[in-house]
Amino acid sequence: MTKLVEVENLNVRFTGERTVHAINGVSFSLGEGEVLGLLGESGSGKSVTLRALMRLLPKKRTVINGSIRVAGRDVLALDDDELSMFRGATVSMIFQEPALALDPVYTIGQQISEAVIRHEGKSQREATARALEMLEVVRIPSAKRRLDAYPHEMSGGMRQRAMIALALACKPKILLADEPTTALDATVQIQILLLLRELQREFGMSVIFVTHDIGVAIEICDRVAVMYAGQIVETGTLRQIVRSPLHPYPRGLLASTTHGAKRGQRLETIPGTPPSLDKAPTGCSFAPRCALAEARCTEALPPAIDVGDGRMARCVLAERIQPASV
Amino acid sequence: MTVITESVLQAAPVTKTRGYWGTVGRRILRDKVSLICACVLIAIFLSALFAPWLGLADPYQGSMIRRLRPIGTPNYPLGSDELGRDMLARLIYGGRLSLIIGILPVVFAFMIGTVLGIVAGYVGGKLNTAIMRTVDVFFAFPSVLLAIAISGALGAGIVNSIVSLTIVFVPQITRVAESVTTGVRNMDFVDAARASGAGALTIMRVHILGNVLGPIFVYSTGLISVSMILAAGLSFLGLGTKPPEPEWGLMLNTLRTAIYVNPWVAALPGVMIFAVSICFNLLSDGLRSAMDIRE
Image (tube, rainbow over all chains, first blue to last red; front, side, top):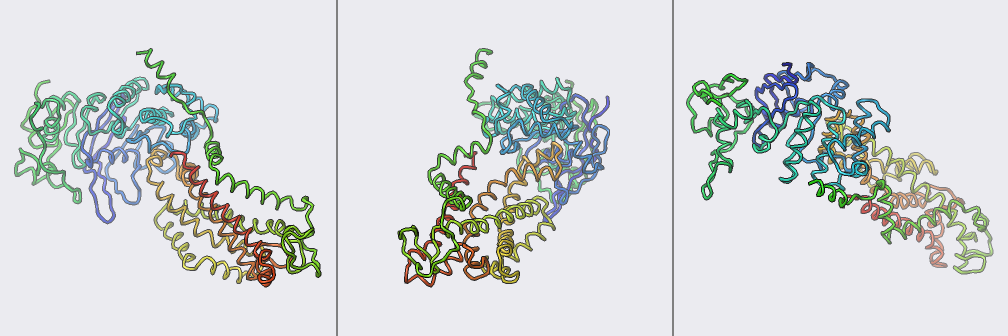
């Protein structure tokens, strides 16, 4: 299968008064029509990974190493014009807070048609027709009138639909979703997730879906990569990771959900806090919080161990632990 | 399920579509203070514009025997000045110059300052430092002093006072534009625009400008009154309009000697300056609240 996105050994460092090693050696790939979930707590580098894919990080204060290939092109080598054509047409993005990600002084129709005109050189009339079509695709009721609505005149769920319409207006191959349901309430969340899943099939897109909510990931993802302190600690299919996580971190995460908990009992938690990212990691970042840590965990960076089935875990224990039969 | 969604669709309140300026206009009309101010300004504008057709006395024609008539004298509804010229005619004709040198510098400064401020705010870095520190140099001087200094250096005259007032206002508008731009620059929708492939120019022209225009516009409207007062001050000092040209600031200056003889007439040009300034200020205030349609 051809891989649409191939990221290899990606490192992102923010320089300035304080250096932050935001991403440390992340590699992953995304096939056509696949939905990959990037799972992790805040500060684990999910959004930074996403933004690096589109080169949206501030140029002056960011150092990016490694290779990012999207649709066969080296993203890090694109010049400004190529980047403009690449963004929106090949890869497109939806954001966490639709109220902030839509420009408040333009109508929904204007914003969508602006993108269409820019990428496809259509006339205003054609672009407006496309905008209307997109609003219908994302099932916004009375789409025709919503074309002339300002973002503040719409509800949160409606805005996120409009945001999705805007992102998909130029038929991108890859959609990057940065916690698109976090700012929405639960009933709207599930509607948006179902819509995304449906559109993904309909358009044959690949999606990278960032979330900190395992429940959301379960709804939408085919494969999941769990991130911790700027590294991917485990990748596998959704089923593998949820049923039998290898790395102690996702195991701890799954244990701390209310899912299997008994009423009246305290939830299991992972002790400690994530490490500061001032220095590049020299050992396992999770070791200080890990109940199973050994001396060698802090001595050297644990290797990414391939345990078969396209499954990877960055933990010394993975050598021993055989994946439970699924 | 379908029944429910259908009824929801019917019930969904869809605001009647109006353009942005339509909404703003409607809200201004509802605000009584702004409405009155706008009417006063429009009246002054129109009378200044159509002054030659209003059947007024000649504003240049003096009369040695009818000097300093009080308000209400027959044929001199607002009295006459120290050379016996009709005050009503001079006030209305004076509005032409006063309004021009009150508004034009702000318009020019608005255009220059907005561009400078947006570029400085959006690009940031060294360019920002260069633009904003240059602007700071101008801030070191009080605006009255700066206007007098530049006018003095350029020489008296209407064009020169417009130039000097523009130079006075550009730094102020640039600073406002820069600060609102830095506020908008990091908003998600700018990132979203970049993510959909917009270049720096498009982002500045469409997304930044659209969002910062309101605050800058309101601030600039407030500057018109300052500009009128400064222009009047320049004329008062002999750096602006030259006699016998009617202009409110100049009239205030020449009538100052008559303040003990006929204080009401002497105060009239000042009243005009005051009325126009306060109307612009109140209007800019009303505009501020009307343009914030997200409230």
